[in-house]
Length: 62
Image (cartoon, rainbow, N blue to C red; front, side, top):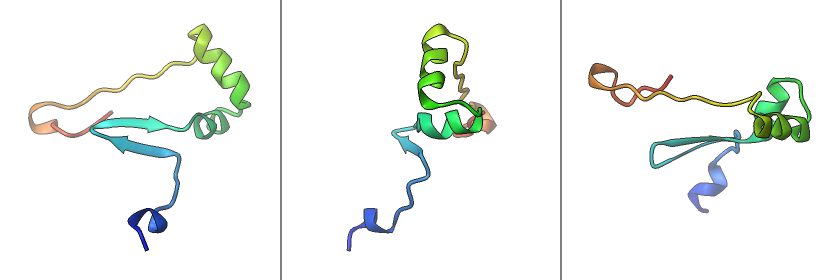
């Protein structure tokens, strides 16, 4: 059995310090269809920000 067989797909992935959240998960949280969510992203109505801590907050994200 491989490691991937034991993993649960949460819709959130970390790759080399970069977080990726599945659009379906975010759309559902905003009570939008995925198509609506993607259209609002293209229009700039929905967008994301991410801050990475430095110093004593290093490796913390907000």
